[in-house]
Image (cartoon, rainbow, N blue to C red):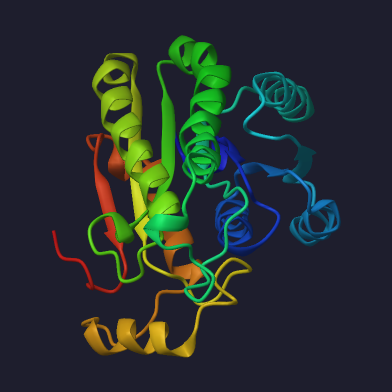
Length: 253
């Protein structure tokens, strides 16, 4: 299915990487559901920018009821089911190396917050859209991960563990859903310059990334956003269960 014929749900899309992904899909003619949790003003401003191909819908992805209501609203608004999901939502985390808790100060609730945001939230969006995808024998599920799983430049323990869990979900769901024409893949960026979450990242961390990355630059949200178009397009129809690392070559795998 061409991107221009699709309806795309992007979680955490009111700002940062999510907003860049929304712009990329609208540019290619897709309908876009801009999900937000608390940033209503930013979500509405983005939809005003994008025009009638986008709608903003509030939902906490950790809530099954919220997600199912959002999916129903989106389907009704565009009069067609959701064909592509981009699980991008980030819950209560900022990439601040100075404030990152060391191992001895972490609590299980720190990990649980990130597991629920990454794994539980993605589980809810996929389940809410699964019946329609199976009926259409077409679906594209794109989970946003991180290269910190492979190369923890900073030990963001709880965040990275949540994304590692999401990678496991990606591969297991890909195994089961492939027979239904549904692909499930992950895109793992590095620290991006610049999002709300990375605004507190120190210059020293970005300098390390630039010095050790073949492209000698920090990846931007727009650069990563365009890669989501590949996984939603006809060109990726034979690709599933993959983790594509988009970080300028810092992690080669």
